[in-house]
Image (cartoon, rainbow, N blue to C red; front, side, top):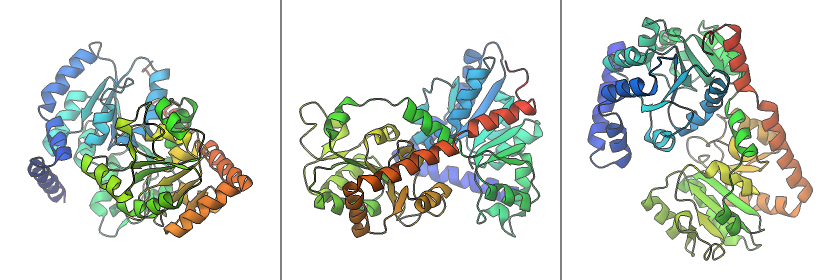
Length: 421
């Protein structure tokens, strides 16, 4: 089975090589890993001449990085005698956070071949490794286990449909024996691990709640966006796809009560932005072209960049989170930490917080444009109902904070961090 897995990895790498000819993201993926061994060796010599213990954190992309960030910053704050290596699988994470100040080294994760895994573990020689959420790379796990290097998963989340829990998933289950400890988000995940004989887990919650709370507490101002918003209620649609926009755009066309709209599509390529503008059919503003003179010239602003959406929710009265008409919704924690009631399409069942907030009245499923329009009008016209929904969101974030502290407390308890200060 390992041969088949490794063969699949080689095929995946070959496909990306071909895709890089005409796909910018694939090209970034390939070029970012070019000469990685030499670059990594040189960076370690330059960035860690004292040969301090190196802690390696891996995130698939930007969302997983934000999930692991509170743990990185807690460790860096308390333990000064360490260096941090941060790796990404996706260009969308690496390109935005390659200059992250709390990491001493930021690299792409090489393709998960036996040779790459062995070489990287040998070069880095980490004191411990943290994988964030569920990025499982089995050759890397094997190489780390062979060197007896502790491996932890942060904010891990498991579902019964995953290969580990299928009758034919025995090989995949065995690979998890390389993990020292799983810090899982919920009881379901812990029970699933226990069902396959893995008792090395504890329920610590989702570290992203710690991150979004910090974002809300240390929010950054955007003067031009504030000017665009003026004093009008603002509807922000984040990480949207075409199916989401088919529900949102009719609301924009119908709304005549002075509401402002900020749209942040999941794909911010030029072609995608121009397509969205053409579907709207009226003059709109693009964030890249926003200035003092034109800030009030439209009631629609399209965010054609990445990395700022989580801060923009401070200006929102309502938020629509994309993905609910596809595979699943995107993250709702960013808007709710600002007390913003959220809407989304019908496919939200994978996310515990979305299900719970719907039941509590802080989030709303809107399967069509009529339901969305009705809910927005109802909440706008009933301040008490709006305030109740907003309070539910804030309270939910407050009650779910603290995962990072629990993880750090456990690592201290087992003396995993001994000698790092």
